[in-house]
Image 1: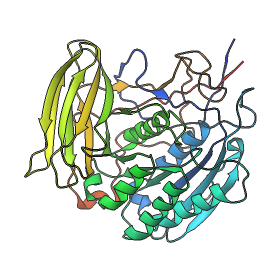
Image 2: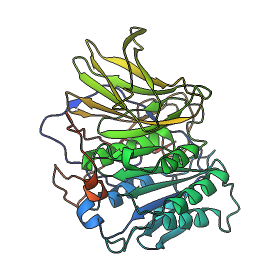
Image 3: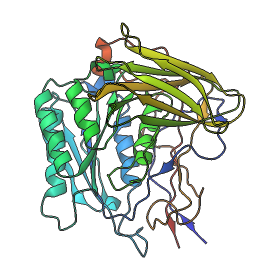
Length: 402
């Protein structure tokens, strides 16, 4: 018998009618623990407007809750360690590197300026300071911020430092849907070079999707190390980096019968990107497009006649690596679950030989966001996309102990 361990709370404001997906989209990255994770949270004054319900803190709690504690570790695994950093004009260590079971997010406010590099630097220092455990490949940082602080060079320096130490860094940028295009390309490239992901988060539901995406992709470079495809979730805009030399990048999505989808690709670099949508179930290409040389955008529409798995492949003929973003909208509201893989053994907070053993996060008793809560912040300076639908995501993870 397996015992399910309940995780900490993640806020979700679900609409009245939601279509549930059978099975799982993606899987929780598998690990035997022994990781060092930094959670870096923006506490600048702009968060009063950007995130009035402190959903970034709730997302941080959900990430921490997915980690392996000293009490949940299995017989073949090791506990994880976590540190929490907040930053405004400077950084503050909220919780020094330690057991996730005792993690705290107390005292994170919304006051001061924005200097993201200080938060990343402090997280790296915590991860590398006085610990006997391995850093390279087993460490990761997740940053939740509303973005542009102007200190581009300093942030790139810290991201390059993280890459050199084998620390994966992922960014969730709280802003309207296309704000990745307003980010400095050197920042996007440096994030992706660490092995991390960059996603623009448009509202409270997409915040939950971002946590799903990070945990499916893997907090560290050893999580899901064999996976070459990226999960694509509605409500998020994610960035990629490809060249003719490195090859294409593929994004996956499981469609429902009758679901009407639109995939949008936007070139950040001045080059042409080619996109192909492939129906894995029918084993046939169902759409293709190339970014326009003038607008830099391309789109592919698709209506699923039956439930199917889709792959969106992005490539370029340019030998120099180029940046792009990809996003997805849909005609239906869905509860998308991310489950543990059934063909691996993970003695921590995922599965042990069970494909769909899951537990649903409970609603928060302390925070009550409005269903339409929207992130504004720095992205007020860029245009917004009209979304056909934004999808609440129920975060599902299992802590299975024999």
